[in-house]
Length: 268
Length: 286
Image 1 (cartoon, chains in turn yellow, cyan):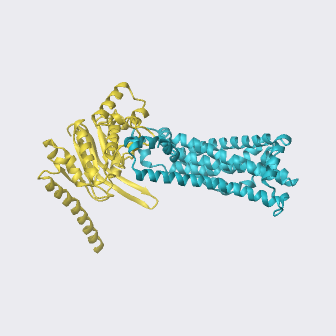
Image 2 (cartoon, chains in turn brown, cyan):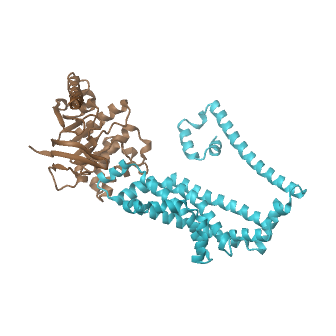
Image 3 (cartoon, rainbow over the protein chains, first blue to last red):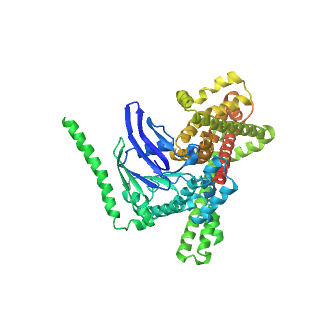
């Protein structure tokens, strides 16, 4: 593969419980190249969170391998992880929140300070630096959470349904915001979501996963990101709905074929 | 107007700021009426409280004076007050009060210190907490006053015994409360620290402790009261000094004025201790 940042090769993962084994991921292979924005969609409970925990090293694959282009950097440096909720700590100010990672690693140099201040200024949060998170709106909180992630200067951003806690209205605008910031900062990103529209409007490639145990059903490359449009504008493109239907059909078919197969099994 | 805000709200500053946005003079007549009504209600409640207390004292005084209740058994406010003046001179009342107070404060501090430490260790080492769980449940549900005679036999009849009695009443419950609170902290917040490269100690100092500050303070409120209970139990059984000793002594010699005086002082101590922690809580949360 050419200049990939991350490569998953035949990854399998099984949960072990007292009741038995639950296969979560089944021979999954894909790669992410520098500068790409890859979305992973799949039915709920298909093992997306498991996949993210595997990628970031919180879990270890039972089989197969996950290779990073730069093995020298440790996990905390390489990945920038955005969680489902912004998880800003109420007991810290915005500044203390966005510098959390650097403070943990005792890495808050003057250079980093300037970089973070520049980010805060660029995304209209500098004047809220000394405020507590509770005084920020939902969108501002998400931006602060993103800056906390960017402060670590990660190679690869991982977004775990970062907008799922927001209402529909702010969800669109925050996704637009975050999408543009990621593009401006020229970061590589993996987005996990069950919102097909969100996946299409943000990414350059969509990976469709099956029900559990998750394996790759289809990969769809999207042309929109090259057109240099904002995620909101992408939603108004003519071929947006074509891609939407394509992905929706794939997701549904896999569900139907899975259940009909199960029915066949029962008959036999 | 400013004065009214100060009286009405416990956090005058924030309300002042909010009202500044809309210019204080431009408060509508209806709003003013509302504020006046609120103020009136507050004053009425305060006045009625004081009147209730006075009425109770007056009733007590008069019924005992005119023989409707036996003043030997039920005493009276004036006799309690006389006993107060007498005890200061003749019975070293302040010495007894300060001994009890000291024992309570020492027990309280040790309860908080030990239970914070133990809860932290239990949180840090999963295996230890799993092994010790039945023991903690057992010790928590045991009536602690049953331990007091044993403690006296082991440690004698000094301040040490009383303090240990005070600790024993509250510590196991406090450990369990804090440990449970530590466990219920949002796992996603802990995951965030791990993702950012933090270790268990970072999770503890940056998430577990700050997010549980409220729980710790509310446990302090409960424990200061429990420490006082424990100290009283200890003093009943084994002390030569302290309010608990004075209560037992006065009941044995039928000095019921002194007994009631001691109970009144205990009430006052309990309120002062509780309010002190309440004050600290407000300082922390502000």
